[in-house]
Image 1 (cartoon, rainbow over the protein chains, first blue to last red):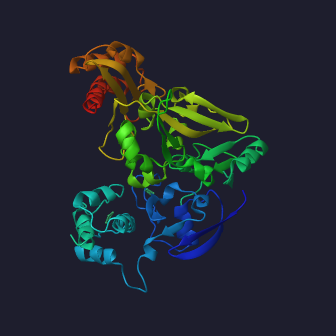
Image 2: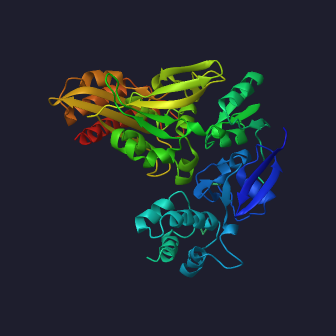
Image 3: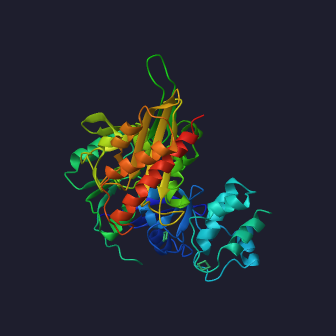
Length: 154
Length: 296
Ligand code: FES
Ligand code: FES
């Protein structure tokens, strides 16, 4: 199998990676781009731990092959903080105590970020829907919803 | 890293029909088409499926989009959907919500939000799962498909797409290009699904129905079930029974019993044959009632 060259925007910076076409985006980001915030849970699109934003839309990177992101703009948790300053949403997660083991957190934050980018003042129900594809084994979700409510100024 | 068990393949993303045709003419065998990849990416990794050439269709941008052609003299209006339109686009489309409600209703119950952003209508159909959530709605909407291959294009009713679980009648070099829904004003359509969980699960059974009434009697009816056989099926005996009758809960319940009789579900990890047979009448009755409630 021949390697292919893939160019895309990662956290606002253009990158080009040479890789095998059957590499999944989750592996590409973790192994070739040092974005280890992207977590692998179920490997089949059920848990949302591997969520990243592609052109602003949340997708599960375990279901995507490297070639599919050619030309796209990818946002991972690494791209949220600016100059070492946490994004408001991240601060809310800390303040609300919405993190236990932390494995689901990057995916949760990114799904919430996608929602807030489109809809800065979502209702509680809209928040629940937006996070419905992200599973958390620890928190029972209450504090996660609270964190997003906080960031949305609810 | 999780080991990449899937065998290697050449990957390409043609940007035009000419390029696609050239690739297909050169590749002898082992071609597989990649749409959203939400099913295929897993199957390629686990080795459940393998191919020599993976042809990503995403470069054919004209495969995305939903458009209406208005009715003209002697010709019904229709909605055309490009096969690479995402499930999420179906879910939020006002045109479909208004004129073909069963489809967006099914779309919003397919997988997780992240999956719906990637998964496509054409991919869901070509994957040929007997419980594909978009299949039953398309069956009751009388959808037809435009297929394309280097040797030309052809049209088939959506019913003629599936052979059995995981297998279509598509030729090895053929893809679904467009899905067309003929419009029928005055029709009520609905979709329902029964799964182990409320959200994000593959259906045990799903059902769609479409109804039209004339002078209080049923003048047109379609019922389709997923999970009731080796492929998504129309329930033609139940339909024939209802035609010309009054739209009552009692008749719908009887139609449900007929639907179970013409079904031959399998036992699978998700549910036994007996369980499916027991739920088919209930779901059929409910989906008919829901379609009725959509008639203004
Ligand atoms: S690892 Fe991708 S959804 Fe679970
Ligand atoms: S904090 Fe542990 S999985 Fe969510």
